[in-house]
Length: 250
Image 1 (tube, one colour):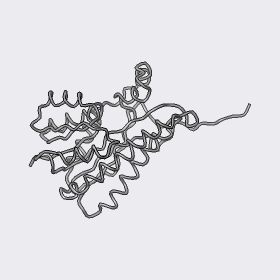
Image 2 (spheres, rainbow, N blue to C red):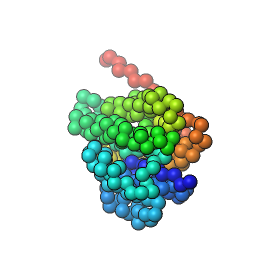
Image 3 (cartoon, rainbow, N blue to C red):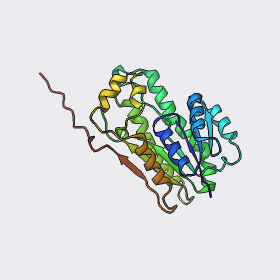
């Protein structure tokens, strides 16, 4: 039986790689994102027989509901949800941060993720499906400039654990996948398009790739249905935990 997966944030990075991985394995894929032209290009590349695209901003609940209601036959029974859409904005410490950026991160990484999950829960329960939430090591390990972004990812981790509690007995599996450094458009978005900053961050670090994360998502989603992976934390070998800071007098 062909399974169906909905992947948010499918126009780049982890999301696009996940679309390609699941589609290549024979799944029906619903790919959502803000950039319609990128979704169209994805559909041109993969074909539309097992791919349905929906362009909307995750912060627009009405548009999200409309897209779900408009799913065509063959894509309405959803077996897995990948909550991938999210972003980091700004690198300044909290006292110099942009409040509008804080609010956008909360609206996207927290509110939109929770809304999408809520709207699809009845279908996922009916199908005994899986919810795969993309968190971050930033939700566990603090670093200067992480502030609200890191807080949103801590929410993703805790939300995943509490979903597991609430969905106990339904057969629905919930996983929080928490990557460290991976080279995607993440840093370009965070720095407002600063390619030099992105190149500097990843140079010589052998970071993870979007394909690494997509492969991990696929592994989790295709495990036997009696197994649940609660949390996966991934880092490239060259990345490890930050040290403590000490502010000294004099």
